[in-house]
Amino acid sequence: MKREKWRGWLTRFGEAPSAEAGSPSDMALLELANGCAALGLSVPETRLCPGWGEDFEISLSDCRVRIAGGDPGLLYGAYAYLTAMACGEAPPAGRRHPYYPLRMLDCWDNLDGSVERGYSGRSLWFEGGALRWDPARIATLGRLLGSVGVNALCVNNVNVRDGAQALIEELLPELARLAEAFRPFGVRLMASVDFSQPLMHGLPTADPLDPDVAAWWRVRADAVWAAIPDFAGFVVKADSEHRPGPFTYGRTHAEGANMLARAVAPHGGKLVWRAFVYDCAQDWRDHSTDRPKAAYDTYMPLDGQFDDNVLLQVKHGPYDFQVREPVSPALLGMRDTALALEVQLAQEYTGHQIDLYAMPPMWAELRETLPPENVRAVAAVSNLGRDDCMTGHPFAAANLFGYGRFAWDPMSDPRRVLVQWAKLTYALPEAQRDALVDMLMDSRAVYEKYTAPLGLNWMVRPGVHYGPSPEGYEYDLWGTYHRADRNAVGIDRTAAGTGYVCQYPDALRDLYADTDTCPEKLLLFFHRLPYDFRMRDGRTLIQRIYDDHFEGVEQVERMAETLASLDLPEPDRTEALRRMDMQLANAREWRDVINTYFHRLSGVEDARGRKIYQ
Image 1 (cartoon, rainbow, N blue to C red):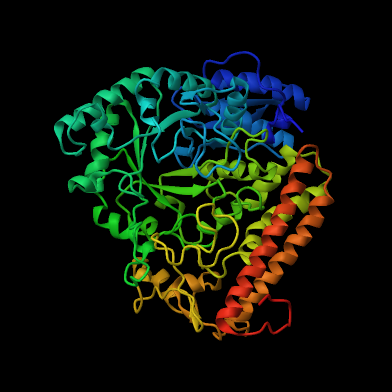
Image 2: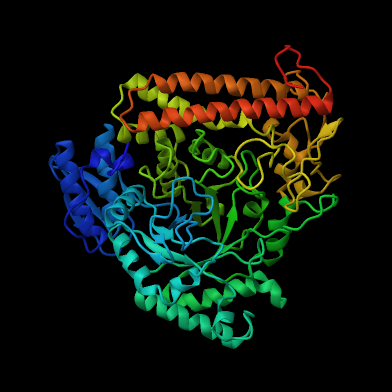
């Protein structure tokens, strides 16, 4: 069924404003007029406050609601008011402002229209080597992002290829038009740039300490900001997975980042430098190299050497958006560098937006080991695309909504966030809404149960990263090993093993290093254990693996029953049920493959006599 006007959680806010807005404060007035009409409310008084920036305040005086704010703060206040009214809540009290000043969405879109690790269709703004977009869809996306406070959008893949270098050259006028479309929603554009780009223009080197290279980038930056005065900055992936970078010239990443940062600094621009650097040509026979150590080993010696407008973007875990990882020690150790936390909305390893996997509970878990003040910005790999539903699965929109809430306030309660999303998106009876939210709250734990167990990673099918393949990456070049044999499984990352655990502050190091205190969900990330190792409830390790996988499938079966009982509108109901059928098949395949794999290795039978294939 064609869905021409998918609006996600905006359904209660009325149609998109038909009049053009030149600024976020203008858009605030239009959104309030439309939204209040849709909700049957009087339009609040508004006051634009110069100097308030993103701050807003909603107050009640003489039975009149008043919204004050900067530009774009007034828009955020308008959306906060409409959200509260639509959800039957009191508007937020007092002057409000976002915790993180930069709240990015990283889109891995390619100029040909494809999306790397995209599960929602083709690019919303690229096709055939050019920028092409549907203005109505861009307006919808702008409203979605503005309504949850996402304020920056990097339009292209960090793996800059297929002519995407032209975005800051001959395609710059088209990029400026796209920036104009997003501007009324408080969303500023960014672009991923190719570190070696000067080589394409006759320079013999891209050495960051070469004056001609620095001058080339200054000229490019001047041109970009002349075309897009509110451009937010550049994103760089360098010396990673065969991308060019400063290592080619014997320079450090601080030297490479600072050169680019100085080119954008006169314009107030940010330079976001991804800390995703590791040996992607590792010999599996090498037991001394441990990929999770790479970010800390590379960047900790550079702490304090980056310019003030550099943001070092660090993935939340030390691997690559796996189902269960500890927080990256680089996020805890680098106290003199401005860090950006990177998460992934695109469900590359977490179900491809087929399987349910709500992320707000995961982000809440981050707070247990990562104080919000350790980072100064947040970035999320986008889950957007050109499908009728921009997030592929209609419920995956909850992750985009939740990300905006988390980026604005990292102390947000995940259940409250999901309840808000459900209230805004669907007109369900309270019991059904609670059932939907319960299902989403449990979905990550369920997915974890039927996939790689207890902190093991990389048991996915190579390349596609969906479905089980226990040894698919075991003998590959990516540093992705679990080294399971007939006696034991897991990597010893204690001081007696690879030493990875020693990168953590003392309290966490001691917690993780001891099997008696290490969180059980991370046991096989930090330890190599025999199959007869006793878990804290008395079960053996192998029995815990069997039990989790059987229970995971049973939980998906119950989720399918719950989903079928919900009075969802079309086409969401049909699409969600279709994907649930796929999830159930995936869960059963994971259960059977993982249980059979470990049964064959260990020779241990399931204590409960359930079916394990030989």
